[in-house]
Image 1 (spheres, rainbow, N blue to C red):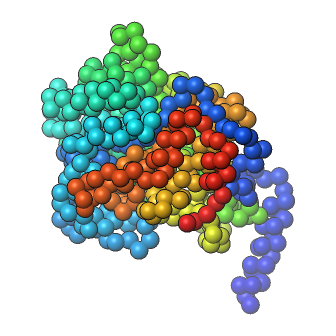
Image 2 (tube, rainbow, N blue to C red; image 1 turned 180 degrees about the vertical axis):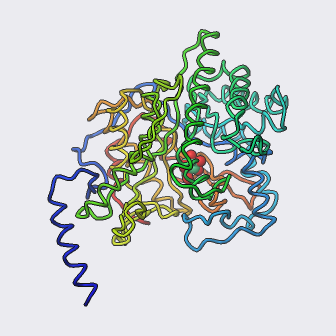
Image 3 (cartoon, rainbow, N blue to C red; image 1 turned 45 degrees about the horizontal axis):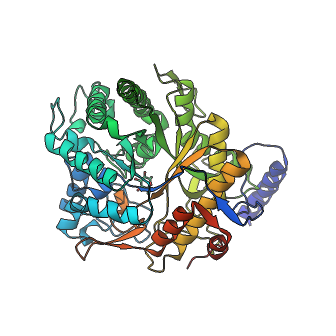
Length: 511
Ligand code: BGC
């Protein structure tokens, strides 16, 4: 009885507050945006259609921080089979020991199969492909001042194969993994916090543009810096496996901003020498952060704060040259950062629900899905699928920065052979891109589905399957295109979505 007495006035108070014009985010009941249907959803000419990957996901293991982590995890048995995929345990890689040493070493065996992969991509109509160049592959040993010749030769073959298959490369420079030696302590600091971190990153970027600058027009300096910081320095599920608070990660965020601005400058200087036009930006992880309970003002405000901190702070800093941390008085001007993005790279996976705790308002709980909605469409990682949120993010990015947008990642983990959810995901999210172009004037120029083939998914190991193409790990890494790969091919061929395709795939279901 005692609790009821306390809770009732509290609920009444919250209900009252929810009527006041308190800002914050609201939750929508939409799944897809409610624009009127058309006969056809035609995409702009020269739209880039492709898929994305990154080195540590697909390439043979290199001497990187992630490779060391993967090996330690096996040596120390930190491979808990997580009963709830999507909820990684700090310091563990889910179910990694279920895959043989050869798979752990070769990942997808891309090193031996990339030409085959690109020929499949070509037959599926892809005209572009996003991948990352491994820093550890070019600078495997401490103290190197020139890139490794075999590393250069490997990527030369990749660029040649892409060219032979008429596929335009989009290249990322930092996608979560670094050389292992980068973490040796120097003057009491490791990794990005070392005083010479930027110097080493500059050496890597310079080597990449000198060797491959002629092949690349769209560069991504950093992939999802805030995901990296969050997972690596706050949650402890990515190397360096630390758990700090928000102010504790500020020096790392500042270093990443500086790394971006230096890379921007180096890539442009190289392109100028070649009289080549390039676009340089970052890939930003976005989500639709919405209140779990719209009636709870604190949920709405917390959702808005997280949205700003996780999505926009980093991009705003690049735009303004000043790094800020929402809800703190932290402000730091980063030299030569201002305006260093030629496009905005958007990665989008779905909706997160924010539930604030009255007793600890600074630590709201983030739900991957709404526990009260049993039928909500979710991926195998439990992430709530929410195409309308994609529209909102694209339009927000367009309004904030007025720059071209490339969707650099969008996809879901779905192991089921019927592949229904992936087909539904693809069609509904592409329609939201069409909506953002046609109803909000966003200049969206390309779509890279995540991912091309199933691969090693960080702390989730090999269990989360993101590929348009299935990788048969127990059958010599055979590639088997899923139905969505063919559906995507048909969309690419017609450079649009027909009303038949839309009608067949847009209804939310969990099949
Ligand atoms: C990352 C990818 C990752 C994907 C799915 C993004 O956060 O950039 O490396 O595999 O999401 O989790």
